Each structure stands twice: as structure tokens, then as C-alpha cells.
Image 1 (cartoon, helix red, strand yellow):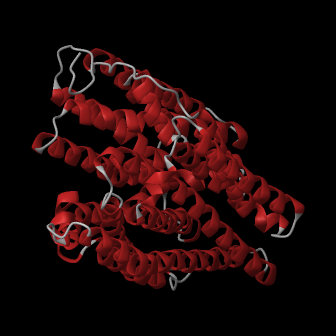
Image 2 (cartoon, helix red, strand yellow):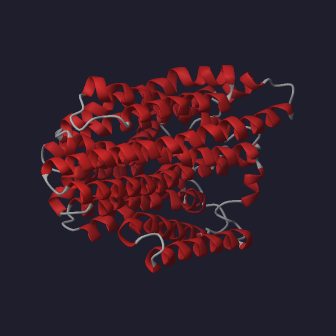
Length: 494
């Protein structure tokens, strides 16, 4: 066994291993994006309501986020290659099931299982990468490639989703994972050595209670449009969700190896970074859901054209995150960088909130999409760096996992809140204006405007938290080690 990496000795080809874990990461991230473009096609084919439609995204995001830390722990207990193969296999099988689904319930079930597979795949892939490449320049280059692949998947997913939905049909956004996942499983077995299992146990109860609690709360939020906030159904699910989250806290305190060591939240920067992450990702993904519906159902874009229209946002975020954001963080710190990034987001969302029913792309949409990409590029890098300021090396793994969990959970919660607000506004307009084609377009546009305003509210809250809370925590963490000025610490974190 290699004592440095914990892997069973065998010939290792680092370049091949990097390619395989990047392939797994690409497939998992792609599925976060590719579904959005296909949503109008799925809705038309299966006859779904708007409130049902959002669950196709939420089911994946919540199980992904809820079981992510458990997946990372399982990789240590069972073996990294074993869990990567298991995660890829589950994800691939669920992808086939999702493509073959002809009704909402089986589709949602398969999406939830996809999220479970992704929650196992993502941490195992990252763990294999860090154990294969020695700390320093080699690992940093590998992590750079790994992050670049995620960005490429986010950009490419829009185009791929449009081409598949507009061509062979929406089931192929899922079927395309089957040959890719199968090939990855075979190649991982052939080229990736397994790690020796570590002693200990997995906190299954913690993962189950936190996921069930979040699902109940999100369900209550999304169904408040149909039942009202004071109905027994809505209040019952809200209460049950809070009870499950309370049980999660109890389980974490009593578990010998908890899913989340609650002491990690004693770091003010990590705690504030997680709060901001939920707000930032909630704003971005919640609004992205509404954009795809607006482009296709109101403006009449084809899936391919809609995907192409959104590429500017994805591409600008990748460029800003990889080139500009690290320099900005190095000069002004993470707190101010987040304020700037969310300032771009707020301005862009307010600009898009005035888009007319017959919006033109270049004058009414393009500037907003570009600004949102810049905002998420700056904010994404800053919040990742913030999570590690003042965190001990021994806690860095759990800190990274908590931030990634906050990203997935924030996306699902934000989508539920923003979609609920948009549907409520559209319903109000329809009750007054009737049900004709023009009235429906006006109602959907009004819902789109409300979604943009609510998303802007999320971003304003994130900017305030960054400016008032995170910057104070950042200064405190820096003053604790006066030998390292803040800009240097920020660059080192990058």
C-alpha cells in the first residue's frame, strides 16, 4: 500500500486517472444544467403543471446535496474506486429509467436516484484526484483541470440540452448518460486503484433526516400556491420538515462519526460563507429555471436556440471565475468581491425584470445574461475561498463538503421559492385577464418579472451578508495571523 495516498499498490497512470475523474465530474455537472433546457418539452409531453415541473430539478438537487457528505464518508469507509463505480452505476441506471419514464412519479423517482448516484460519484472522484496527485503544483494543475471541466459542462450542457431536446427528444438528455457511464465504469475498474477501507461507521441517520426535512419544507413551499400558507397541508409539511431537521441536529450530536461535525460552524467565515452560498445559488438557479420557460413558452424559442441564447452567461462565468475573480479576491478580499459580484447580479436581474412580452434578445436579454454570468463567476470563486479562511487543515475536507452541500441545497430551496412566487403572480394575472393566448403570455411574463425581483432579493441579502458579516469575519481571521496580509491569504486560498 502507498502510505501517502492510502491506495493499494498498482501501476497508476495519473493522466488517465485525471481524465476518468473529470469524465465523471462532467457527467454529474452536465445533468444539473441539461435538464433545464428540456423542461418545456417535458411539460408538454407529460402534461405537467408548472408546480410539478420544478420538482424534476428539485428532486435531483436535494438528494445530491442531502447525501453528498455521506457519499464522501462512504468513499473513505468502503474504498474510493468502489464508491465511484457504485455511484456511476446508480447514476447510469437511473438515467436510463428517467429517459424511459412516461409519467411524473417514475421520472421524479429516477431523478432522486440520479441525485443519490451523483452524491456518491462527486466526492469519490475528487478524493481519487487528490490522492493521485501530490500536494503542490501537480495537484493544483489537476484541480484546475477538474474545475475547468465543471465549467465546460455548465456551458456545454445548455447546447447539448437544446440539441437533444430539439432533435431526438427530451428522453435523450438522460439516455446519453448510459453509454458514457458504462464506459467510465469499465475504464475506472481498469485504471484506477482502490483505496484501503478505513475503520469507522457512516451516519446514515443524519443523511436521511436532513434530506427528509428539506424535502418536506420545499414541498410545503411549492404547494403553498395550491393550498395556501395557512392550510393544514402546508403547515403540516412545514412542521414535519422542522421536526426532521431537529432530529438531524440531535443525531449529529450523538453520532460517533457525525455527517457534519457541528464544531466546524464555530468558524465565522465558514458559517457566513454557507449562508451566502445558499442565497447566491438559490438566486441563480431559481431564476435560471424561469428563464428557460420564458424563452421557449413566451418568446417561442426552440430548445436549441434557447440553449444558445444562454451560453453567454455560462461562458462569461467560466472566464471570470478562472481569470478575473482570483485577481479581484487577491486585491480586495472575498467579502468585497462578493458584494461586487452580487451587485452585478442585482443590476442584471432588475434589467431583466423589465423584459416585455416580445423581448428582443440583444437589447432586452443579452446584457442581463452577460451581467449574471459575471456576477456568478465572481461570487462562486469568492465564496469557495471564504469557506477555508481560518479553517484548520484537519477540517478542510469537511469544510469543502459543507460548502458543496450548501450549493445544492440552496439551489433547490431557491428554485422552490422563486418558482412559487412566479406561479402565484401568473395565476393572479390570469384571473384578471382571461385564458387566451395573449393573456397567458402576459401572465407568464408577469411571473418571469416576479421571479427576477425575488431572485434580486436573494442577491441583495447575499451582498448585505457579505458586506456586514463576512468582511468582519474575514478581518478577524486575518488579524489572528498578522504575519500574513489578507491579499496574500486570498491568493493562497485560490
